[in-house]
Image 1 (cartoon, rainbow over the protein chains, first blue to last red):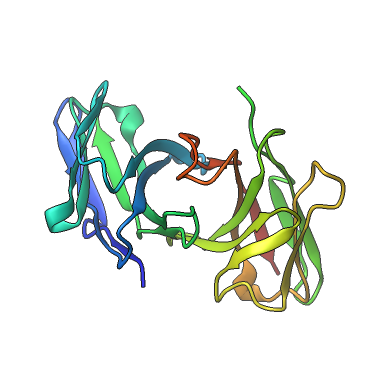
Image 2 (cartoon, each protein chain N blue to C red):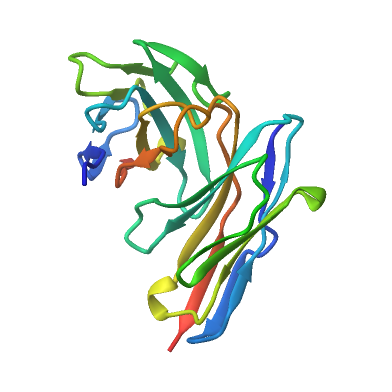
Length: 114
Length: 117
């Protein structure tokens, strides 16, 4: 069965600090996809990144970066120089190769204080 | 940029009543999904739909639920005989293809908040 664990329920940081959100997944599939979504206080889900299980290259997009390590089944998300607008719940998710069996983690609530 | 549109944004219904949640996926998308998020909890997959039939459904998606694409643009979720525990945010999503086929992820609507009284 697929499972996503986000051990950090809530994190608070002060603006401009770096913060890393952890994501650990379980799957028996050899091909799968990992995702991060942001859910701001307004409630919508905002897609951030998709990563194929065969692509272990780390990715950087502006202040966001992702560290995919297959050996530890982790797909961690780092926000550099955090801003108040980064305050949201962040979900890590996992799907099989066919986009099915889409499983979300429980989410990490990030509060960035001014 | 094209969006997934969900209506209404908030639906209040008496327990035991039927409710239909509406979604207009992005026009060239072929795969459609419904998810549920109970307040303060994680997002849960309900069902995926392709080629006018359900391709995958979770344990949550029992006989109380049904989906339909009645007119080629709308994608509806019907909940029969609603219960208090059906209160949640319901998200619709669509994708152009499966993740393995393209770079297109699922695009989510803003959600419909369903409150059962």
